[in-house]
Structure formats: C-alpha cells, structure tokens
Amino acid sequence: MKKISRHNKKMRFTYIKCAMCASALAILFFPQWTKFEKDGNNMFTIRLDGTEVGVVASEEEADLYLARARRELAEEADGIVLAECDVELQGEEVLFGKVDDEEDVINGMIATLSQNERETLQQAYTIKINEYTVNVSSTEEVLQLLQASIDKYDTEHKYQVSLAQDTTRELNVLTAKVESLEEKIEEEEETPLFPEAGVYTTISEMFEEVEPAVEKDFEDYELGLIDIKFGDEVEVVEAYLREDELTSIDAAIEEVTKDKEKNKIYEVVSGDTLGGIASSNNLTLEELIEMNDTIEDEFSTIRVGDELIVTVPEPELSVERQEENYYEEDYEAEVIYVDNDEWYTNQTKVLQEPSAGHRNVVAIVSYRNNTEVDREIIKEEIVLEAVPKIVERGTKIPPTYIKPISGGRLSSGFGRRSAPTRGASTYHKGVDWATPVGTAVMASCSGTVVKAGWGSGYGYVVYINHPDGRQTRYGHLSKVLVSVGQTVSQGDKIALSGNTGVSSGPHVHFEILINGTQVNPFDYLN
Image 1 (tube, one colour):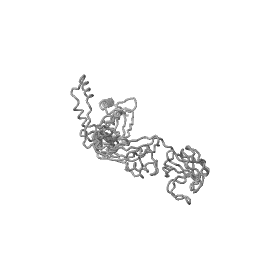
Image 2 (image 1 turned 90 degrees about the vertical axis):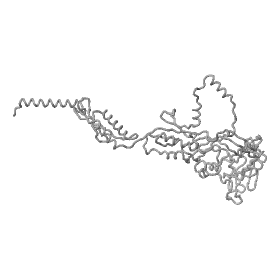
Image 3 (image 1 turned 120 degrees about the vertical axis):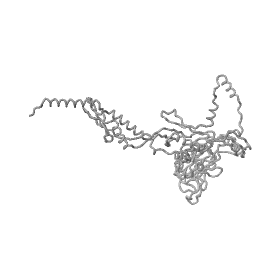
C-alpha cells in the first residue's frame, strides 16, 4: 500500500475547500438555485395540460407567472381571451435545486395556453325588449337601432333617442328615453342667465295666473307628430361575447322594426260578432275558431267581456305616438233615449230618425305602431248640425225562461230536419226532449194559461202568455194539470209528458213565440 504524502493531503484539502466556496457563491449569487429550507416543498415543477413548462421556487410564483402569461396573451387580442387549461404543481423538498428563468417559464405558459385558446370575447351590448334580445357591438349601434324604430314614424326627425342609467337597478343597466329636440332647444334658450328671485318671481307668477286663455283657431295648431315613446320596456346591458353572437346593425334593425304576427288578447265589446272580430284582425272565421278552444263553430255565442286570441302584426319594439290631425267629416249625433218604465228593456221604438251632419275637426289621435287606439277631438266647427236619433226604450227587466223539464235527452233541435214520422213537419218549430211518459212539465216562465187541452197534431197541449208579450207551448202531453185563465209562476208543474198527437215516441215538445212566430228556444233559455 502506497503512503500518502503530506503534499497530497494538502492538495486534497485545498480542493474540497474550493468546492465548498464555489457552492456557497453559487447559492448567494445565482437565484436559480434554491436555498435549503426545512419547512417542506421548496421547488415546484409546473405542468399545463400535462406539458412541463418550467420549475419555480414557490406556488405563489407559479400563480404570478400564469396570471402574467394570460395577461400577455390577452393583450395580443382586442377583447377577453378564454384559454382554459389544467394546472398541475409537483413539489419536492431539495437541498439545492435549479429553477427556470421567469421569462422562459412565462413563454412556455403562453405557448401552451395558445394551443388551448378557445375564443376571444369582445365588448358588446345586449338589448332586451320584453323576452326578445339582440346583441350589437357598441352604444352607437344601440342608439342607431333604437332611433330606427322611432324614425319609422318620425319622418321629420323631431325626436332623438338617448340612453340613461336606470337608477332603480342595482346592476349597470341602461334604459332608453325619447326626447323632443325642439323642446330641448327651447329649454336651453329660455333658461335665464340671472334667474328671477324674491318679489320679481311672485309678480311673474301673478301675471301668469291672470293671463286669460285664448281659444285657438284652426291655423294655430301645429299639426303632425306631437309625442312619441317606446311602447315596450327597453334595457341595455354591457356584455362580453363571441363575434359570432353579434348581429350586424342592418340585420338587427330589420329584426326589431319589421312587423310580425303576434298573438294578442281581444276583449269582446257590445255589438261584436265572430265574423266582425275575425275581419278586423285580418283573420278568416276558420282561423279565429282554430285559435280559440272556447269557440266550437261559427254559431257559438260570445258575450261582452269574453277574451279571444287574435293575431296582430307588431314589431319586436312597439312605438306609441300621438298626432294632431285636422280633417273634415260627416258625423252622427249621439242617440237620445227616452225611458219608458212600463216597457221591458228589450222593447224599443224609434221616435225620430237621424240625419248626418258635417264638421271640421282637430283631434289628437293615439297610435300603437300603425293601429289607432284612441281619438280625442280638441276643436270642432259644425258646418251642418246632425239630427239625433231618438229612441224610446223600456226600463223593466224582462222575465227569464227555463228548460221545462229536468233531465231528458235532446232528440230534435229547432229548424230543418227529416220528418221523424208520417205527418210530422220537416221544419221543426221547437225543440224536443225524449223523456219517459209522466215526467213533470214546468212553466218556463210566469204567465197566464190561454189554452189547455187537445191540440190536434200537438196532442194534449198547454199555451201560456207571458208579460213580455211572448208565448210558450208544451205539446204531446199525457195529462194537463192547469186550466185556461189560470196564472202560473215560473217552475210551476203544469202537465205530465206523454206521446200523444203526431209523435214518434215519449217526449216533450217546447216552443217560444215572439209576435206569433216561433224562434229557437235555445236563444232565450237561461
């Protein structure tokens, strides 16, 4: 075994000392080497979607680098960039370890995020009109769209749309309002440089109060559009959207201002008919019946206050406006009624026939889109006085009519039919209910019995005259329980059903006559 010389020992000691000094200097002057710490993981490998992008000294550094990478990626685009990725940090505790340069790590992150970049979101504005929404790219396009809805009716461009903060909402929501340019200019011109104060204000107010109102002549009216506003609530909200979610301004204007068929509720008023309602709403009678489950056919009864579904042409954004119009027209005077307490309300008599007059008119006409909803005459000049129609009418409530039996099966309605048996009429002047012989027959309405007994083809029959001038008849009875001249009340038992006269089976025949002519009983029964 060779002996180690003193010189060799000295050289080895010097080498070890130099190595330790070099390591210490590296730790002090090269930050990519981490210092030893005893509190756990002190070096972290970052992976984005499984791809290693660098090594850092702490989790905080990893978060800061990723945030900077996202920011730099977004700065290269015009909006918000969505680039999703899975971030994985693998930590380890080391005595010495090399970390990567910050720029190298961030560039690696950007490269990986760019591969996962899904879309760029750009600033936009969503316009909400009831349940309808449309997205445009700027507030200028919002105003352009809303102004187009107004300009459709404001051909002289008297009104302008503006946006204002909706103070009733917690979120940043804008709402639209329509302003008169003329009034805005007048307000600016009338605002005094030195406003009145004290006694001068009181004197001005006194003169305004005593100044007499002067009636306008026709030429004093400024005819045309006098007010306009949106008929639907408009909300505008800032949003960040993909480019393919935006609508071009021309297409948006087309969508919002073009008339479309929409279902609306129509409330039936006095004098309405199904055919009239259909016609006034540009529908066929068949279309109106198909849209409303409550209407079975063209003969279905409608009453004042009933609600029917109709379609009307309306744009997505409705506009309400008022116009001051001058016109000349023939007009009818209001009907004058003379009440007669001795007559029933269904009794009337014309005392004077009307004739039309002629007048010149200024009226404020209100519209919703192109549909007139109200008309107020504010000035008129009568050229020829109209003669009113004078009608005498009753005030007493007329008696009611009820079905003369309980139960029974409707076996023959009113009107044309095939003769059910030899000798029977092919035009049925009443209605029949099939019912067993002996069923109680009741007076449909109070009145006086004018016939009770055999009535040829009717078999045993009862006729009753009623206070409103009508008459009811009950035929094919098995037994009559009243006599001529007897007064009966509604619901009194007057006979028993049968199968007498020209009859095809046990039933009750029932008629209502007005002025001696049979009418359909179903039009009068309660």
